[in-house]
Length: 351
Image (cartoon, rainbow, N blue to C red):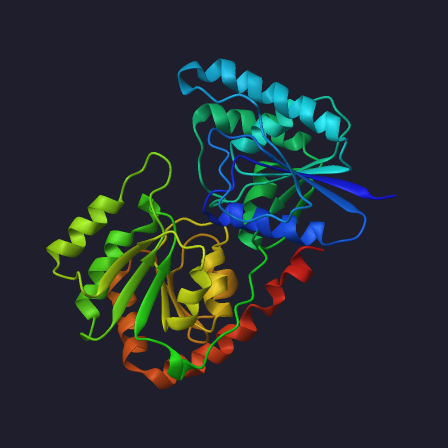
């Protein structure tokens, strides 16, 4: 007899959490006797990442109208409860702080096992109402999945006597190219939100650029945020139009990993940044802020990259400049980068 797995997420638009759910959907559906259902129930329900044909996708029939938020939140709850009961899965996997509250509430009183996972900085504070609700309803989950040991410590204090397990993100394997075939390019990949500090990265790059390097920024605005215009103006102000490129979201992002030489990451708040793992898999040394959770799980300082104290721009520029000027160092770190993320292969994480 086969098993049914139900994956619940608000959308599959570009993002780390969404990419992990997509990768798990591919992995689970490749297994014999496993039937995979995916419920997209957010406001937009966008699908950026391609899914296998055998994954059954379910969406509400109504359009969420934000001006009647309370009514449509109730409609979403009712949809989730009825749809999941109709599917009759052996278990449900839900991603996303705030969103997990909705799934747990929708299945309150049911016997269906529900596993939940927040995908952000474990110390992130939600609104007062969401925090209170989370404290009440998270203990009703069958299990809580966290991505790092730090997150495990935080959540065991928040939710004592609950079933908490650390499972890192699966990292896509990217076949690296010979370092001689790479361009003098520093790469950043991520959504345009304030905690990524892309404006700081642009300034730091321009200040240390020997003149023949490029900075490629892949990503775009997220939700109601609008940073693209701001970054474009900053690039013009710095006279860096020929060295800094805003490339938007790219489905062929792996092409950019392969042809770049360094990965730079200025985020100050993460759960488990997939892009760092993907950069390492592609053989890129990484310079990243050592924020609360994530980078330190993958970067061994001085071996496959550098962990820089949060917001220490002087140190960040120093390490970036060091890598830009030293091809032998980049080559040495590249070899260690590839080996360092083998433990995050989907065959291990998916199981």
